[in-house]
Length: 157
Image (cartoon, rainbow, N blue to C red):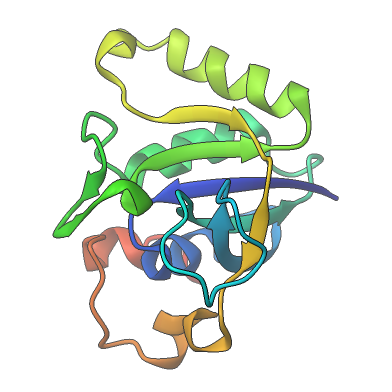
């Protein structure tokens, strides 16, 4: 299994979407690239993200990027839907340099690549979100989500 981290605004919807994709083995709500090692500290520069474990024999980084681009506005800086602020920025993070190269190539090959605001960076820090944020939309399907419901449920079996 391999691991990559996706930020796409509020993590509730991103986790709910990613967990149903072919080849995704597990997901976990968290925070990427902040400066602390806990969730009790005030905002420390992190991006809300979803730790995504996947089987590379079933789904590639490029395919995962295409899925991510289905649910985000890639041109929006620090905002997805009604969620505004640095923690709602879009991004792709990994400890594997090959994942980052593939994500960068995916963006670079697009005609609109100069307009895309998705950051692609090494994962320097990850903190698991509190239990109340794990699988939030599975447990509370009527909670807020910036992702349109038809997209959110597109890959459910």
